[in-house]
Length: 336
Ligand code: NAI
Ligand code: NAD
Ligand code: ISE
Image (cartoon, rainbow, N blue to C red; front, side, top):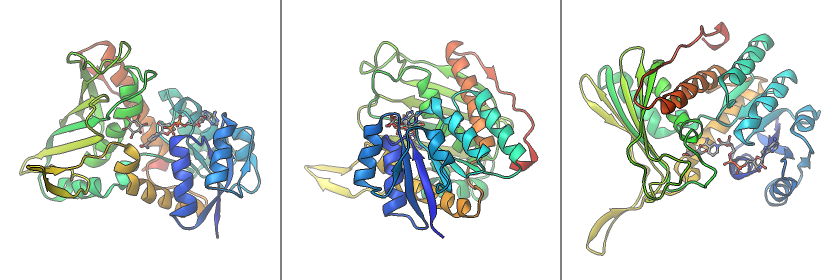
C-alpha cells in the first residue's frame, strides 16, 4: 500500500519533508499540498510533487478523501487547529514542533486523542532518532552509572530580526526539553534562566546567549547554553556526567584535514544538514505506523510536557535567576 500524504505548510521544513517522502523514503507519496502563501505550495508541486492537488485551506486538505495522513509543517501557532482537525477525521498526523504554542492547546490535543482511543499523532522531535543520541542513551543506560549532571549547548549561527527572547525556549530549547526527558527517562521539577551580557551580534529584542538550568525529579541538574547568534556554525553539544564516567554526544562525521599549518574539521551551519538522517528515520517511522492507521515515536503527551516545561522556562526568563516549579498532571493510560 502507498500511503497518500498531504502537507500543510510548504516552507523550509515542509518542502524538505516533501522531498524526502517523494524521493528518499519508501511506502508513501505526496498527494496534497496547502500553504497560506499559495506560491510556496505551487513551487513544491512543480519541483517535488507534480501529481499533488493544491488546497486553499489545511482543513480542506485534511477532509480530502484521497488523503490518508497529514504532515503539519506550518508556523507553530497554526499547528493546534490542524492536528485537532486530523484527529477529528481519524487521520494519522505528523506535527512539527511545537505541538501547540500553549500548554492549554497541547492539552486539547491530548484530550482529543485520548477520546479517539488510539494514537494518531507523532511530534517532530527528531533527535530521538539521531544515531548519536541513540548511542549516547545506550551509554547513559548501561555504561556510566546514574546520571548526575548534563552540560549542553544549542548554537545557531544567526537568527532573523523576528526571533525574540522567548523563542530561544519555544523554538530552539524545545528540542533539548524533549530529548533530555527521553535520554534520562526522568521529568523536570524546576527551571531557571540566567542571562550573561548579550553578544554584539544580537538585537534589541533578543537576549542572547541564555543559560537554562533544569532540575529533574531524580535530582539531575541540566545546564543548556542557548546561543543563536554564535556566528561560527550550527553546533549541538551534550555531555552527561554519571556516577562512574562521562559520555559525550558524538560530533557529526567530518573529514579531518591537515591544511595551511592547521589540523581542522569543518563545522556544519544548517540544521537541515545536522539532522538530515534523523528526519529520514522519523518520517519512515511515521509512514510505517500511519499505514496501519496509528502513530509511533514522540507522542502528544511528550508535546504537552514540552509545552508545560517551555512555559515554565519563559516565566523563568521573566524572573531571571529564580527557580520556577514545573508540575505535571497525571499521564493518561494511552501514553504508558
Ligand atoms: P517556514 O516559515 O519556512 O514555513 C512555514 C510555512 O507554513 C510557510 O510556507 C507558511 O506560508 C506556511 N503556513 C503558515 N501558516 C500556515 C497555515 N495556516 N496554513 C498553511 N500554511 C501555513 O517555517 P519552517 O522553518 O519550515 O518551520 C515550520 C515548522 O517546522 C515550525 O513549527 C518549526 O518549529 C518546525 N521546524 C522544525 C525543525 C526541526 O528540526 N524539527 C526545523 C525547522 C522548523
Ligand atoms: P517556514 O516559515 O519556512 O515555513 C512555514 C510555512 O508554513 C510557510 O510556507 C507558511 O506560508 C506556511 N504556513 C503558515 N501558516 C500556515 C497555515 N495556517 N496553513 C498553511 N500554511 C501555513 O518555517 P519552517 O522553518 O519550515 O518551520 C515550520 C515548522 O517547522 C515550525 O513549527 C518549526 O518550529 C518547525 N521546524 C522544525 C525543525 C526541526 O528541527 N524539527 C526545524 C525547522 C523548523
Ligand atoms: C528551528 O526551528 C529548529 O527546530 C532547529 O532545529 C533549531 O536549531 C532552531 O533554533 C529552530 O529555530
